[in-house]
Image (spheres, rainbow, N blue to C red):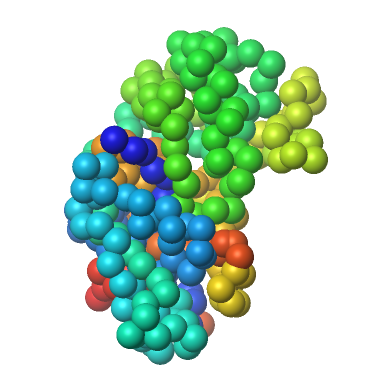
Length: 258
């Protein structure tokens, strides 16, 4: 079984006149949703690796929203005969007892040893969090999660034990040239409600996500670690890598639901 982290927009954000918000509340309400709109080649390829054995509801199939000119992530360069973009259907499993924030994970990664308030994750869990793509390649919207890191995050979600408000307002831990957090007593973590910046461009730079507080929305094997904004219509945003007015809200079912 493989584990995955998939980012979404927890707050309302209008793209081409439509709200691309897709929070944990939205996910819980619909239970199963297409993960459309990914316009990053690496993220797309990772989705193509996903299998029903990972508790994906439906394995990768062509993302038809790329051909819909009214969709926020329309790609005029796609060809229906030779699909370029793919999506999977994911299934909601459950909520986490404790919100595991990006700021908390950054604080753990910036420490020289497991922080005392979360020492129960152990040395292996500590090292696994430190090596997560979320820490070192934060903008990628779909990421692999190693089993040890997944177990550590589940432990954090189940056990809690830290001051869940203590990391808010802190600055991000300084990073080395390799992108790894520098372990320093001055390193600070950054927190806010996960926001993913999207911007449409080409194959390799069509959208950018910078989730301040992104957490794994779960496929069936995952516990959601997102503190969700209120229920509403939804949509998740796609990252790229070589990655108004009241608008009709989007949902994941083309991530353009109602």
